[in-house]
Image (tube, rainbow, N blue to C red):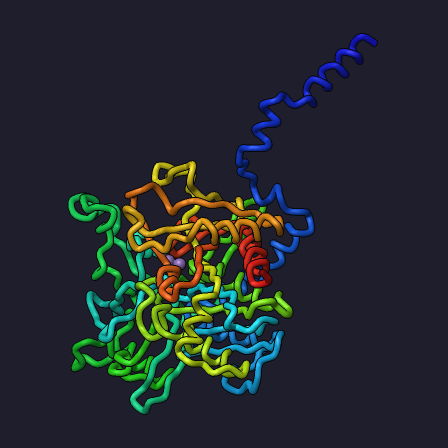
Amino acid sequence: MLVVCMGLLNKESKDKKTKYQKLEEKLALKKKSAWDQFTDRQKKDAFRLCDDYKSFLDNAKTEREAVKEIEAFAKKKGFSGIGEAKELTPGSRVYDTYRNKNAALVIAGKKPITEGARIIVSHIDSPRLDLKPHPLYEDSGLAMLKTHYYGGIKKYQWVNRPFALHGVVTKKDGKTIDIVIGESEKDPVFVISDLLIHLSKNSQDKRLASEAIKGEELNLIVANIPVDDDKVKHKVKLAVLEHLYDKYGIVEEDFVSAELEAVPAGISKDVGFDRSLIGAYGQDDKVCAFASLIASDSVKIPEHTTIVLFYDKEEIGSVGNTGARSNYIEYIVSRILELSGNAASDSIVREALMKSSALSADVSAAVNPTFKEAHDIFNSNFCGFGALLEKYNGYGGKYSASDASAEYTGRIRKILNDNKIPWQIGELGKVDEGGGSTIAIFFSNYSMDIIDLGVPVLGMHSPFEIVSKADMYSAYLAYVAFLES
Ligand code: MN
Ligand code: MN
């Protein structure tokens, strides 16, 4: 009897919150894992969505392949070509692709686009090794391909692993052919071979990590068997040319007009006993591209016109005619205006863009528990804690940052909270530790509101980047809520 009473007393005093516990609950921000916030059904949905995402990753390693996947998705979901469309009424769906490297999916809103659109912009290029214009040579009994790295990579991460070649070659006759070698089970792969440990003591071991593998050392091994003719000087190289000619009709000069990209071979994988994470090449920024692609279809008849955009060349500064600094967005908005029966004058296009709200959908760093010293742990993003907001990025004293206003950040935060979407906010890393920026700065040139909303990644720009399924799903939910706002 006595024991039971004591138990009750203890329980009562445990349940009763102190004044300051209550105050803490009311005032202090609590970080909570997205996994703890999701219902069981949401967890299942997250896993299901990520199965589709893994297929997307495997089929869309390059920007061109991503555009093909996006176009196929758009057609399946009832989007018609923006060129063929006659008019737009609320709920009309149109899409566009450009130079096989840009894409846009549009759903006309109830309000005219002159009241602003809801724009999500991501990029579909990823760091990789491009073949040089004269890539093929022979050395020490091996045929090799010289590469030029694209985007920021820690070069030592890209050696001793299987590579596939993806891309296009425009031949002498002007015809362009697609090439993918190294992805199917039976395909051969290619490799950059690092120096063996036994011989690196006095040379390579003394280099800085940033120079452990130098740019000119990123040479792929592609063949070993020579042609049987002693009168030929580069017999292994010629054997490769013979093979390429027989299989694809390519001659050496065709490399000049080619875009052949060496990317990590193989498929995406679940990571962890609980399969809660995804490991794959190119998740920066296919994770946001895929989440926004699926979100673009989840919206039925939005208040504001939705525009989901996919750009190339982000990894080298959003430059070029397919990067986010090009005027593709102006073209898309002009077309929407024309199809809605408006004159697409310069001033109206500008007004529509100025009144638009945008999300720059890109990844940022997740805290790596082994390298926590790079992060300000109070202002960092964590795997599995939801979609990440980044009010600004850039480097040093916020140089090259698009710093979203308090008002706009507040608006987005409210959308996330109202829809119970797990989210977090942080900076890329410690102040002055490094830095980076993405598409937001270029879209902010149109004077629109824009903020980064994406997914935290471990091992960004490595051949095997890691993303939590909870974060990918949170980003998807966030994009839908934003497009519907
Ligand atoms: Mn990115
Ligand atoms: Mn990147």
